[in-house]
Length: 436
View 1: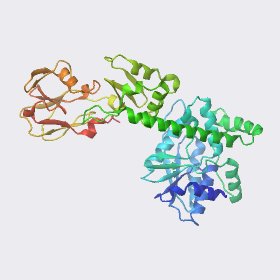
View 2: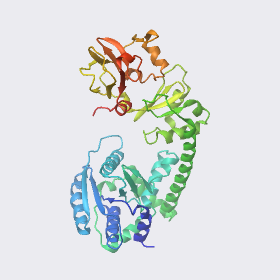
View 3: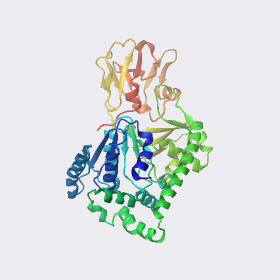
View 4: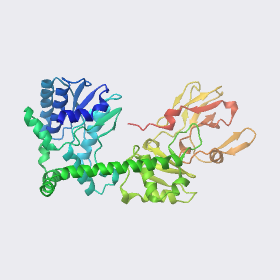
């Protein structure tokens, strides 16, 4: 089977996409892919093809690459989008550049579009070795997926089963020209060391080493799929709600989690939190054990990169980082109770029913508040919130309505019908937006 036929077969499920975007760095791999697809489009009924080049600005040589990419695209009759990104400095420049690149891809895509990527079999073998040496688990050792969701569309790698030599032969046969990244010669970078020093030596002893390593990654991907199926079964059993219709926070039943082995607990949490935050490696899960095993009256927290896990009774809840972002907790006047009131960093309140007379304001708990409850007299606010099942970590953000300086109502708890019913605008408060 020709390379073109193999690629089109792997893209067959994407033939109805509104657009194929080709990630085009200007290097050998993406040049071959773009040329192949542009040529195939003249003979086959394919979606429109458009290239995207991401300019990281990390080295002087890269400033010439957009012009080269434009020249190649012009010769192929393919439109080109160039996106400039800012790479945030960090421990791994490679990782930061990759994250910036994929963020640019994701932001550009519209629903059901396909981003076609040029990684090949040698890249897969390199990725497996790199992750193995970093102590990755099954998911990491599955290396790169043939396809995965990206933004509002999907990313597909139709060359992932093809060795680099096949791409080199195609480029030679068609007289293609491409750019070379000077950093590829720096064997001080981990991936370059594997690519230049280790994989060639392995291939000297085992000529099919790259193919075997790629096949091993496929076995790991299959094993991960089975682990995901098990996690989905466990998640279905342990799904829980806080019992507050106005508060939608992902939650699990901790009692059911404790019935599982520790390995299945970790497997469940990786599946549940995988799209929400980056999880630590297996050496740094003590925070989970501390949270799980804390006393019933404790308020343990497991802080992760994009949020934190909290406990409320026997419920385990995930709070996004926005819940911990700074917000204005000072008392705020509400000049016109007939209009919604934005609360800086804390969503918005609005009144349903008749607006009470008097000077209205929104405040927050300071401690010691009491509220007149019809038929019950003056009640301690802390006790009322406990009775209503409001989690401890929500209570500081819960708006209190004051009239002429006196507490008369609590958001979402219509304890005083004479004041009307005070309600949150759900989407703004349940997921408060962090500034910036």
